[in-house]
Image (tube, rainbow, N blue to C red; front, top):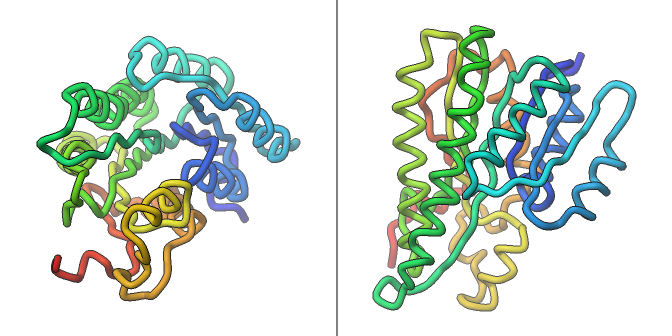
Length: 251
């Protein structure tokens, strides 16, 4: 039996990379999935067309992480369609890398607003429904950078570190109400982002004790577990999935 049969999940940023893998995994586990996208409507519609079936309906909505009303509209539309919301995956985010002293103030503000602000607004928008239901799963996508830092990523690391702290604080508030809150901190995962990093820093695989990059599907499997009843006793945790890269000190 599918672990998430008839559960309703909302995934922010589900049209590519890790987000798309999460959408596909949750659907395969029996969930109804709503996901958001920023600009790539064609890709989002293609995913919906491919995954839609009689047992698992997939819906995509455009959404801006910087717009609270846009986020609330997605949550309202999800509840109008399904009348419940069991799982929130805060995956959407942006990167604006640059050395700290040369970093544009707008790049700092945009990353904090999109990554931390988006997680805040989505979580706040779904909490009332989850409290009413007396159950729910909130899963935030963090990053190993929040734990070990990253050159040229002061804004990104700060946003993800704040998400870690928010995860723990929110878990403390909600754990007695049937709602768990956890974060997943991926390392180097085979996505478009990695392709960009390869051109800047060379052979990154040498930095990973496991000797390879992670696959988006591996992150998705962890998210699906945390969304399931099997993980009911796990809350307030930052779970690193990085092939061991965070075990190493920086050189």
